[in-house]
Structures are given as C-alpha cells and as structure tokens.
Length: 332
View 1 (cartoon, rainbow, N blue to C red):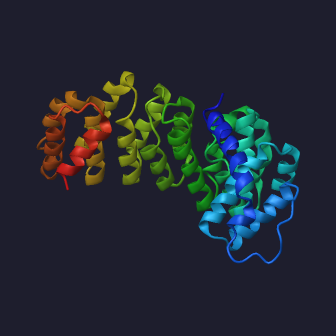
View 2: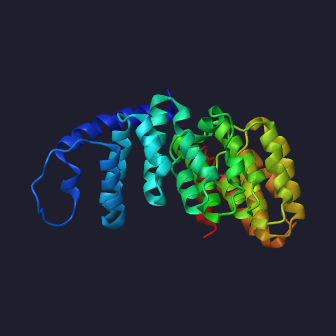
View 3: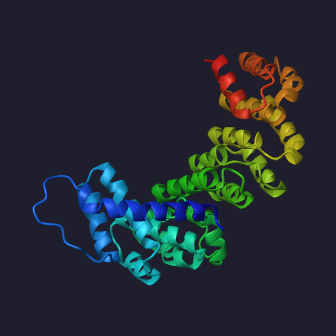
C-alpha cells in the first residue's frame, strides 16, 4: 500500500461525514437566492463549483472545493476525469483536476491513470498548463508513477523546460514528495532529485533540489553526482551540494568528509565555506571536532563559525535538528 493510501482512505471517510453535513453551497458567501435542490454529483458539476470558487471564492472555499473534488474523484469513473483533464484549458482548474486524478491513481495503485496528466505536463503548448499539470502530481508517489508509465516523462526531462514556472514546479514536487510522502526515507525519490539537479540548466532549481531533498538513502552513484556539483560555477549550487553531502549515508561519509574539507580549503566563497563546515559537522556529529579544529586558520573570517560548531558539538546532542538549532543560536 502506498504511503498516501491510508491517509486517503481516512480522508474519504471524513469526507462522507462532512459532505452529509455541509454541502458546497453552505460554504458560499452571500445570501441564498434560490432554495437548495438535490443534484447528481458529476465531474462537470464539480468542476463548475471549482471554477466558480477559484474565480471569486474565499481561500477557505477554494481549499474546500479542491479537497471535495479529490475525495469525490475516488468514486468517479477514471475515464470521465481523464477526458475532462484532456480538454481543460484553465491552469488553476487543471491543477485541481490533476490532483484529484493523481490521488485516485495513488489510492487505486494504478499509475496508468495519470498518463493524460503527464502528457499535458510534457507536451502542452501553454507553459502555464504544463506547470499546472506538474503541480497536479504533488503529494503522490509521482516518481514511481513516471517509472511505471515507462519513463516516457521524467523530472529530468521536465526540469529542462523553457518555462521557469515549470522548472520551479518540478523542484517543489520532488522536495514535497521526499518530505511529505516518504519523510525523507525513499531512495528512489532522493536519487531522482539528484539526477534532476544534474540535468537542470537552472542553477537555482538544482540548488533547491540538493539543499532541500533528504540524502539519507542515496547510493554511491548519487553521492558521486552530488560531489561533482561541488565544482559548479554557481556558488549557491556549490553550497547546496555541500549541504547535501552532509546528509549522505554513513557508508559514504568518509569520502564526503574529505571532499568537504577540500572544498573549505580551496573555495573562496564564504557561503560555500560555511556550508562545507555544516556538512562536516553533520557527517561526524561529536566526532567532527578534530576535523573542524584542523581547519582553524585556513580563513580567519571563518574561525568564529568553527568555534560555534565546536561549542554546539560539545553539548553532545544526538539529534541533528537540535544541534543545528543550537549552532544557529550561537551565531545570531
């Protein structure tokens, strides 16, 4: 069962209860001008509600109608959802519909259902539609979906899109999937993020992927790809690669530590050196002290940063987030 399936089933039960109490019209603003009438729930009628809410509804109503569409889609025929998605021309509505279709695919464990969404993401002539289709895949196991659909459309391909909006959506999807769907534990997603960063021609997108996606489960090939980014022309990308190396598995820690020490000694950018120190501290935790002490004097301006790490490490905190928070407190 996919990580999202259990949550989806719970939401469906909650949806049934809520919908019996609060029809969509009850959330609309303004006085009722006509009596409520029973209506058949169809793709078209629900999209009419979504379209109206996205055009002029409150943020709460917009969230509600999108959520209701996702829940209702679980019981709707897939063919109707796919046909509606294929003809939709409004990016905001397409994103909501894509999210509903992707949720249904995840719940049914049927990746083939998202093929029309992948087609819009890769082939539509409108960049706003392409970006909306990519965003529709957020919150589901999209990397697995792409693989099981034959790898015809991948994030490595989509990240080379000419549209900055599409490229940003790719990065946001992978960051969200790693953190929210798999809690950072999925090797496939982490390695897809590394490969996508390597394929990206936009250094800001590559830096976001390396700096924000968990590296705790990656294999040796991915570690090598990240290490190669330490030589990137863009300093923010080099810093992000240094941050990523700090989170690689223990088996790769010795080589990663050596690369970060070399980076600190040879890179002249302060932000890159700061990221290298953080990576070294994370790799070794309390055992990083001798390495950090050996780097004093390489750049006198960085010595206070080293001292802050040494002070934080002396507390013997066992959780990285606690250690990072303490170090940040010391360097305010």
